[in-house]
Structures are given as structure tokens and as C-alpha cells.
Image: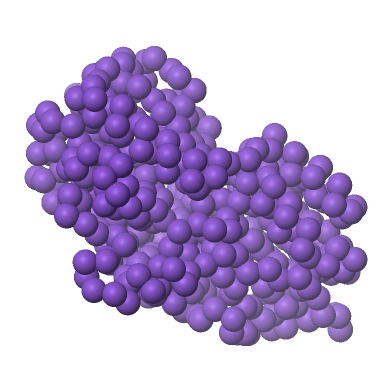
Length: 468
């Protein structure tokens, strides 16, 4: 088997790896690259391979940096199956259509400005029709079931505990008379997170491709995250300001809502209005309710009770879908909380809320997700005083607070603890991806210290051969 690391190699976004085995080409994810606007546009629009020659695609989970360029893959001629868990397929049904809508809206907004400046328009990367076309090619599969996806290649999804439907991808390959196992972590979750089950350990594997998003650092605990959430809300309330929370619509929004419900019911925060302003997050929350098979025991028991015990709904919480309702939030002057996408502040309604709130020192922007390089969210975390939103300069006067304990990614100690449970006598080689260079190299050193001698941080577009 040959593996070419085409995306998320020494980087965090745009996950995409090509497996070539027994004459077939299996694409492992087709994620959206996020970064500098022009670079993102070029990389997402122009795939680094002939899409018509891909036999099938395997998707670990629905986050846009893993799934977001599937419509473009289909637009470019891919006709094969896209394998995913049931929950991932349902989430992609909402997320890819939403992504196409956001791309179209953002391009329309940018092109108005370009027209006024006499500049030529830019084209959208893919259309809503192309997003819908990609959904017809999904084949959904249960956890823990073997499925043959190519000659000599079987696939099994195991629960990765990262977001709803996320999966470790276990490949059993028979090639040249030899059989061996490859595991791709996708994004590995953390033990003890609310709502979802813990990651499944697959001890017997020959090769591992692991993420390394937080390969050089540790998160705070879940309890510390909830305590800081409480502190930020109370301090901002005392100033009479708003708390603006950029959050991924899948996973992070539901975790924050879950904790806000508990804090509100325990009267540890004021009963102030809370808005989830994202049509996608509204849809995703309904999908969460449709997949209790992914819940941990505590949450499963809770949802079996009456509607009053809905973990993702309570009296002061309002889900906002329409654009008119979203715009009305900008005219509210009382203390409130707005949770909106995207999580890296690169598109969507969060940009409008930031534009209307960032210059008010009474407000707080609360960052609860990883922020990739060159994103607006990263610039906020790094303390920049002047930032561009929709191409216009704004002075940041609002406070910026960061909580990393909500991360759904395993941190350094959790990644090493997971790998430490594997059969390291059998494990021949580990590839470290989905991390910026410092994080990937740091995790690679840690894995070597566990006794795995052959650990590689592949370069972008590097091809390696395994199983020989």
C-alpha cells in the first residue's frame, strides 16, 4: 500500500490522504482547508489528483476540515461511494448544504465590495446543488461492522469519542499474500467528555496514522473549563456586556449548551438570554437527539426522562434560525450570550456578531475551540488590536478570553495514554498528521519514548509505502 499525505500534513486543516492498494485508490477524507483567504480558495478549488480515478472515500467524521470539500470532489468527477457512520452521514447532510450556503453568501458579500472597487468577481468553490449531489454518494455503516470497500480491503468504524458519529477507521488489508491492519484516528476524542462515549482502544494494529492537534500541550480539565465559563459570564454580566462565543456547530455548541444548562439550573450564572444563532447548530442539535446510540450512559439516561430534562434545551435558551432574527440580536443592548459559527471566525453569522461587538469594551469574546494559523480566531487569541472583518479594519476593545478545556481533541497526555495501550511489539510504524509542525514533532518524540522506534511526521504530498 502507498499512502500520500495530501492534506493536514504538518498542518491542522484540510485533512486528505490517498491510499493506493491492490490497484485501487481509496481517499481518506476530503476536508476543507482554512487559512489565508486566497490560499484557501486555491487549495480547496483545485484538488491535487484526478477525482474521476478515486474508487471510494472513507470519512472519519463530519467536521468541515475533514468533510467540507466532498462536494468539490464530486464536482470534479468522483463517482464512488463515501463511507461514514450513520450519524456522520446525517450531520453531513446538514453541514455540507450549510457550507455551500455560507460560501455563496460570503462570495456575494465580497463581490459587492469588489464591484464597488472595480475588481473582478470571485467564483464560489461549490454550489448547493453540488453539495446535494455529494450526499447521494454516501453509504452509512454501523460501528463495529466489517465492510469490504475495495479488493482485499475491509473497513470497520470504531467510536472515536470526538463528536457525534466520529470514528476510528480500521482497515484490514490483504495485499500480496500478506494481511495487516492500519488504523486512522481521524480526530481522537477525550475520555470523560459530556454526552459522548469514550474513544475505543484498538490494541492490535500494524500501522497507525494519528492526529496531533494538541501534541505539545495539555488541556485544562472539564471542571476547570466549566468554572472559567461561569467566571467569564458573571464578570461580563457585571459590566453589562455581551458574551460572544464562536463555536463549531457540531460538538462544541452542544457541549457549551449542556454546561450552560447545568450552570443556569444551579443558579451559578444569572438567568440571562442565551441564543444559539446558527441554522446549522439548530439542525445539528436535532440530529444529536436522533442518535442516542452515540451517548454515554449518563446522557442516555437523561434523555430517556421527560422533555424537561432535555440536556440541549432549557427556558432561557433560544435557537435562532432566520436571518431576520439573527440581525435583531445586534440591536439588543442588555447582557446576553450569543453562540454562533464558525468556530474559527472565518465565515458565517459569527462575523456579523463580532463586527457589531468587537469595539465595545463591555463585551467579551470567548474562544472555546482550536484556532488554526491565519484565521481571525487565531489573531484574536494572539491579542491583535486591529483585525479585519469582511475586509474592513476594526479596533478590538472587547476582552478576549480562552478556554481550552472544552476541546474535543485528545491532548498530549491523552494521545500518549491511548497509544500506550496499543500492542507496541506489533506496531511497526506511526505517522503523525493533523498538527502544526511543533505539535506534530513533539508528539512524535513522545511516541518514540513509548518504545515505538519508527515514527514519521510526513511532509505535504509525501508518499510512503507500507505493508511490504
